[in-house]
Length: 310
Image (cartoon, rainbow, N blue to C red):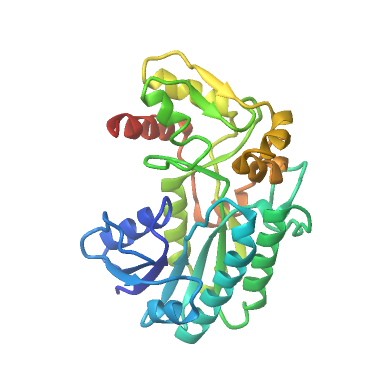
């Protein structure tokens, strides 16, 4: 039986979720401020500003489920108002429509940790973006009695067509153009990366799951932890090249942030780069029998997509 699902956002994650749902026969409505030029045939579009509760309610009309996969500029000044307003609007809209919600989330709200990150770790009060996402978490948790919500927590993205990523246009994309890869983070720190097709696959598993699997957070499993240098070396090898890499030393992030806003924003979550950043996806893997895509598959697919787009 088909169902109508509203997807807020059509970026790196929203698009593959929409494509997978449409391919299997679900009725899909994409809600964004402007119609995407590459919207898949058969997918409905609804003009929607997620900061406007009336727009959100219209986008959810007739939908049994929703996916919140929006992104905002990587700037705490924007996040401070945009994220809480969006979560309030979407949660209330889902409550009115009787829809379940899958929220594509990250893990900043857990703050600095020395152990692999699990879903039951406490929320942090420190940092700008981490504190904002902790507030957003409390919003959806507070609505669980009225709205079934599942938060799908993801590490940093990478994958085919993912440009805005530490391993995106300035990293794998640069290698594909014959240029040195550039990193604004340490090259040799062990760090988990979530493969975007895996995130989309995980989202569909939650959309198909019973209500008992909602009302909680789930970490997306990642391939075994590697450093950015190791992954970029693999990518260069796919292209038949030797890795050329330029990376900002971690100690330079905060000074650089005085003149370059993005560096300041990365420094705000410096705890994801000053030590190994490992995500424990065991809960999701055990529940759904989920096996993440190996880097030996994901990296070549990502690099080749960048090479094709040159």
